[in-house]
Length: 119
Image (tube, rainbow, N blue to C red; front, side, top):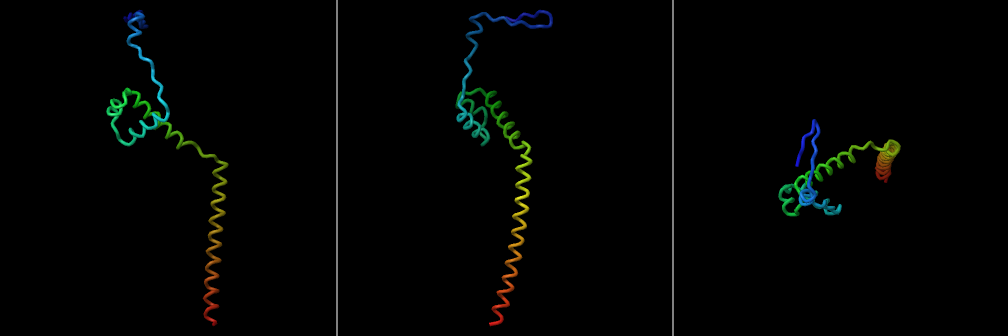
């Protein structure tokens, strides 16, 4: 029964009326949620998954939205600047080493060519 008093709404349920319409929320294991999300991401229709597993469509949409948001947040986290700068420095050092080795190789090729011509 709904009563309107001023600008507030008061909802009064009889004990029996509220009890028969209320369902115990289910807890789903994370592994199960992951499998359902894989199905949805692979392109299965929400309605089909809902009917197959007996899960409300709005709950499936919520799981999917939360998973997408979680993926976006983890991929857009700022990188560790200290770790990142170490990687950049190591990368530059390795590139310089590669160039030095290429030069050494070219020198050795030319020396081998000169030695083989003198025989």
